Image (cartoon, rainbow, N blue to C red; front, side):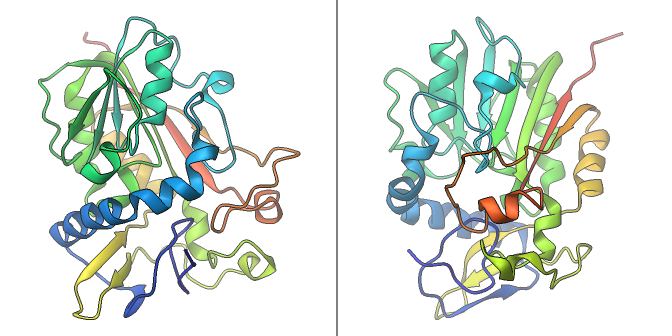
Length: 275
């Protein structure tokens, strides 16, 4: 697969009629991304499946491993929801650590490729979680649904609803500063070409002008405000550094850029305990 000129951070695309930045509705986004991930599941996993692995839980292209980072804390015996699980590599790893994990994704194409016997997988829109209030002790998303919706405040509200008091919500997104730079792993990716404050979505269209992929940019302040408005408490903002010896490029993530620019932002939050 080849990178499309102007493509979003880290996601490959095939030949397109048009790709660029324009406004797109929430429903166009949902329809496009469901189809895109269904169609691209095999190619995505062929390219990235080995790195994502089945015996680990990585938060992003830098390779930050949950086994070392411990952002979710002790998961043994806890009900855990993965939002935007893809092929459920992370949920499968958590299950081996004693968690009662549930993987949720918009794309059936990704879910049916999950190598997780006995695991619970649910196809649904993360903006309307099909679970009762206070169903989970923990929720997380490693580059899952959050960047791929026009209204991420809906995800924050829904996750808050299904978390038990004191429950933690941890999610990783492309670091917002990356949207100011071309998605290129080399020197050309080191010069800002767009305003960091331009929130126009990145959109791909087919020959008929239909949206076939959409990704939405928010500033770091936007992400934090969504968390706070949902009634969550921000505990930490993790910006993984590029580790020595890690030479694998993933789209615009590379050792060159990773040493100079953050590529991932991970927000660690929790729902307050009841008074």
